[in-house]
Length: 203
Image (cartoon, rainbow, N blue to C red; front, side, top):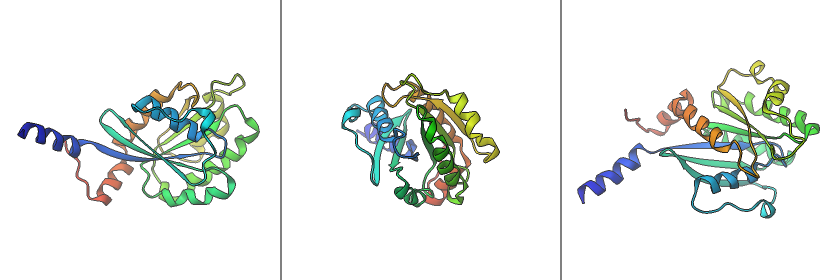
């Protein structure tokens, strides 16, 4: 009995929880991505794409990757809703930014919204994962092409990665999550947020 209780206690104190923002302009596929993510990492199935409606406000998703709990905040990307993004910046360990790779006419709007978010002091040092979404579509541009277009390095020195994904068929999602969890665990921003919350890390 003691070993069972000790095992449960050890699991609770050594399991880290991270908060990750999922941002992007409307129709980038944020909620579809989150539902596919939940279906990959959870027992329960996420919503099928034909039942997903545009987010007005906030969707929350929880998964566990390698004994690490991750809570996702999926925020609406319509122009009138982007002003609420910054209310979540302070507590975010990292940022996922989705771009619809099959809609070049909206790349400039996506770039502008991302640059505005990255300039905010409450997101300073947060690792950035840019997901070049909708790779299941034949006209989708590659992650390399979008990397050159956005030219993030000129704007920011934070840890950043581009990953080609599809929220529809799931390609690239596991790889991107493994990278994200790895960098969050080593991030100075995570250390700062743990210290602010009074959480001690164990070696």
